[in-house]
Each structure stands twice: as C-alpha cells, then as structure tokens.
Image 1 (tube, rainbow, N blue to C red):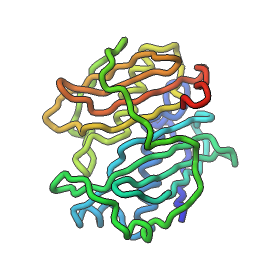
Image 2 (image 1 turned 45 degrees about the vertical axis):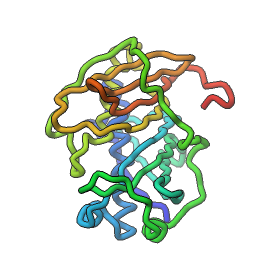
Image 3 (image 1 turned 120 degrees about the vertical axis):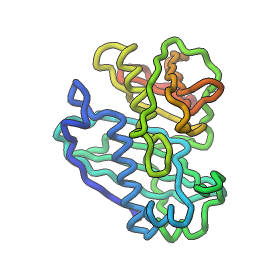
Image 4 (image 1 turned 90 degrees about the vertical axis):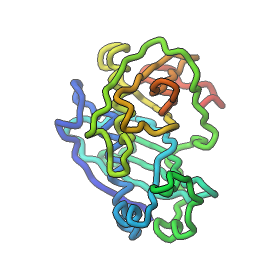
Length: 251
C-alpha cells in the first residue's frame, strides 16, 4: 500500500527565489507519513496512546528539480519493511508526471515513556504492507556521518518552545532549516542544496536554549553537524546544485 497526498506549493513555503524550502519539503514527507499511518489504523494519536511512536533516524533526500511556487505535487510514500529494530520508508515527489524528488529513510520504534528503542512490531507489516519498489539506490544502513570535524563556518540558532512537536522533540524539519540558513549565508546567492543525508543522533532537550550549526567542505561534498556543548544532535553530508557527482562507489 502506497499513500499519496497532493500539495500546491504556496508562497509561505518558498525562499526568495520562489523555490521550495527544505523545511517545507520535510514537512510534506511528515504529512504523507501521517496519512499512511492513519490509513493503516496506527496514526500518531493512537500510537501515543499506546506509549509508542516512530522516530526518524536517518534520511537521504535527492532533489532532481527544485519544486517552485505554484507547482502542483504528488507526494508518495511507502514502507519497505523492517529488520529487527529498523524500519525503512521511501518517498517520491512528482510534478506534471515527472519525478523531481526521491528520498529513502530509516526509522526506529520507541517507548515514549521509557525513552527506549523497541523492536519493530510484527503488526507493522499489516499496518502499512510492504512494497519492494525503491525510490533511490542508496545504502541508508551504511551511512555513518563524521561527528568530530572542526567546522569552517558556523552559526548559532535559538531553540524556541514552538520548535517542539507533539513528541516533545525539536521537529526534524527544523534541522534542515538550520542547515539551509547557514548554507544561504556562506554559499553564493541562490545556491541550493541538491542532496542531503542526515542522521539524527541525540534529541535536543528543552533545557538547551541554543544550538550551533557547522559545515566543512570535504572532497567535493560537504559535512555538517548540529551540536551543543558536549553533544552532537545531528550530522550528515550535503551537495549543492552545480557540484560534481561523486565517483562510483562513493555515494
């Protein structure tokens, strides 16, 4: 079973160049995941009532063409099944029949009260069914970001009460917003992110009032991390439009 939502890119979702922000793109993914869960009878309210929730651990997003203001989009998502403590979900976005965004992701299932990772329940295969299609060729299991590099550029972002979602987490879309803002300040005008791979490492607790975002160029790609004193909250890599593709075997 694949779930689908449709969106028309609105003015409040785009940047100064009328292109969809990465924050909005991530929110589309969240909305489609919620619709899929509702269709399977395991929506967020039901899960939280059971003291359970899905948490995004890693995602790779590849933009083939940036959605723009007024574009009418079809956002598809589906489950690729689970192995032990890991569940896999893919996404595709189409505009006028053309695939313009692909993504693959890894999720974990948690006990929200004990903050404990649980084995993916067998019922998940019935909730979502399992599709064999792959949105992109990327080994999400094999991705391990560099947590220890020294940033070349960085800035600080305030954490506001409105940044927390119903799971009491700083919403995943905000992490990509932090990154996109720093890229916008340090890279040429209107240079946009083409691909990003991120691992959410440690949640940002409410007592952390601000985080730092740092980036560094490395072998044609770019590394980034979001951190506070003594803790890395997320890290990954990104590439910009106009940057060279990686050599075979280096994706």
